[in-house]
Length: 143
Length: 143
Image (cartoon, rainbow over the protein chains, first blue to last red):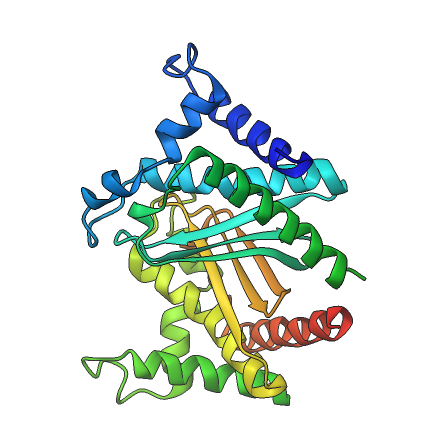
């Protein structure tokens, strides 16, 4: 894991644990928690219908990913970030991370109820990449 | 009305009329349509509870305001814009208008179910000002 990947994973797990009112995740390692929430293998994905409704829980889990980008960005650049996300019940939607007047992350969803990563390593790499891109966009566009 | 106010009002009414499947607004003037949708006098506002749920229809009406800013901005600057809006059922939320990587409009809501303008002139002036500010933010932040 590089520095940004590590930061992303730490931010994401700390948020999940902060929301863990009933101790569901207390005895599990970070990797176990994240795998359970976000990793679906190709085989598992076959069992999730292409068209289906998305529930509030899944929307919240997706939001946490972008919230983590926002928080990690803030830790790294000292600039407050926020997330605006809209999602239809059919899983069409969009999430943006905003740093002041700059859109540092922009993600569209078509079938958000299937939003997942094939392996834990893919989650780590993709999260790190999102964060890296966010910082790059900010550096390019800031005044 | 100045040029931007006029553009805002035209964009807003044309959107409302485009969505008017059942001809509800067909026989009314632009001012009548907008007044019915968006104008609440002080007296009328007293009859709307401070805390109440917001319905889908109202959320859509608010979205149209920001969608109009986005469209009018595009007509003016030749740059595609989009709206991302999130709204809780209690009327807490946020709407942003994005032009490429720049957040040109940013509005928070606390009691969106009460979102309205006291007079038609206030709607015209506020809409024009939103558009003017959006263009200014864009000019300041674009690369």
